[in-house]
Image (cartoon, rainbow, N blue to C red; front, side):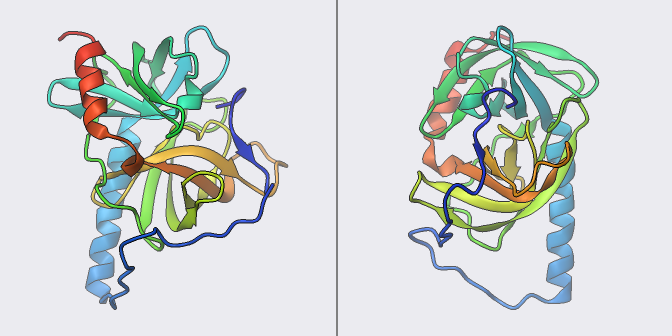
Length: 240
């Protein structure tokens, strides 16, 4: 988000570590297995790109990114809470300029997540809502799409989970490309499972206005009761 973005400028040293549980398995991968993993990631990239949207508050000046989901008859967008802090009406915008009104029906400042109920979109393809049930592991590859910058061009990036930051709140650290407006982007694994939401960015230089290598600070979807998300959309969303 431009005006309200959380930006980390190497203010403190990082101590990435493994999640508290789940041992990290490191089996040897054959060439075929690596090719299959790459193909799966490419499919996830395409799907996340087709679901990526820009999110703007109607009465605000900032913006961020998000992803469009469908679960049964429910249509909704997930973004970061700090992208839509007022909880008021928002616009969900596609790269072609389609603008759909939405309403925030679920939000958690601690988990930095907000859910926007919409009636649907014509120019975007929703992702199935498949939240990851376990903590993501260091070394896993992820993908996200968003709208960093002042334009509606969709940008898609892959990244690698480097570890966890737990001293300043629980964050998943992802080595990828990031910039202003990345906040709210949803990260997916190669199977299309929702891993988490970009909450903050950390880069070493601001000499350019394009996406740069850096760390994405991601709030894990495992920190949220996803059943409450679906209930909130069902109760507060538009009737179809």
